[in-house]
Amino acid sequence: MTFFEELKWRGLIKDISSPEIENLLNNERVTFYWGTDPTASSLHLGHYSSLVTAKRLAKHGHKPILLCGGATGLIGDPRPTSEREIISYEEVQKNIEGIRNQIDRIFEGKAKLVDNYDWTKEYSYLDFLRDIGKYINVNYMLDKDIIRRRLETGITYAEFSYTLIQGNDFLELFQRENCVLQVEGSDQWGNITTGIELIKKKLNKEAYGFTMPLILDQNGNKFGKSEGNALWLDKNLTSPYKMYQYLLNTDDRKVIEYLKVFTFLSREEIETLEESVKKEPEKRLAQKTLAYEVIKDLHGAKEADMARKTSEEVFSKGYSEEGMEEKDIVLIDDMNIMDLLVSTNIAPSKSEARRLIIGNGISINSEKVSDPALLITKDMFKDKFIISKGKKTHIKINLKK
View: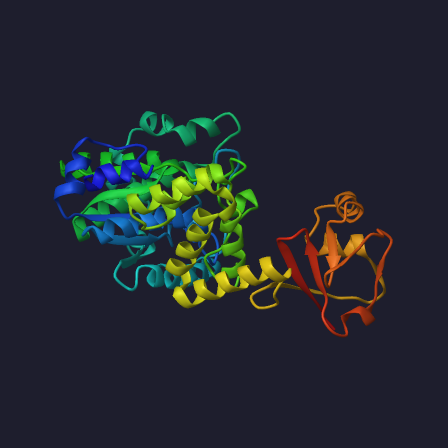
């Protein structure tokens, strides 16, 4: 396979701006960029699906520039349904610091990191309209899918202008760094093409872009904080063990897709694992490999080894406290077990908590709970207090004074 053919085999190519991209990726060494807005202090697994593709391009010899949008983060990329909440300049800067550290670690310090606020802050409003707005037709902007979908419910001028700011990023990096390619998730296609159009009209030069399909979880949702299922790359927010367990529980129908996207395993290795899914699914070799490889790339081999060891102990012994997720509660008076399950997010509601208890799905320190009226008292926390939901979820509850 050529490099481009490998990307297609892995399911990493959705839209391309020109057939010339195949030649660029296979036979040249180009500078490309991938960007994200600092809407949180950490990236999540959805970002990682794009980051790992950028890392794949870097391993092939292309030069990566990773942009954290200090300017675009102050505006907010239009969402399909509603306007994003504006966050403060101070919060944006704090988020950038956390994200930069994660990117730097994933790329082992070998990627150039930039912030679009560095060049956007130099523009006055009038200069931006003359230098950038002059070249992009409003009808062209209205034809962007994300903008068109928002016209019925309404879109502010700030969000409407977002594509111009990101288009200018591509122009700036093209001029400053000879960056000729932008690589993003498929929801950024409209912004990529704005940059390509701007470069063509202002400089009369050709730039390129391709998008990757958005990776969905087993329920068909995006991996992201807006979907309520974020798995953070910051291990203080999502422990390596918790992410390992999540990936270990990947459905057989999704695991090969994830191996292609999230790991650097060869085609031969992945096809061997695909055979194991078909012939011996009970061994879950594909899921174990996926979980280990992702944690190793994100946090290093030591954390991956520890997560795997803890997972094996959980399976063989019921649970292990090492690496286990912990939650704190304040207990002033005795608390009903159902209230405890809801307050610690083990169950989404009291009715679901009752259903779990009656169905023998809840244990405390390995002892089944059968009474929904059970009261939790402070005396129960003298040693340890570990709630288990089924065989896979084990949470240590700490009594906070």
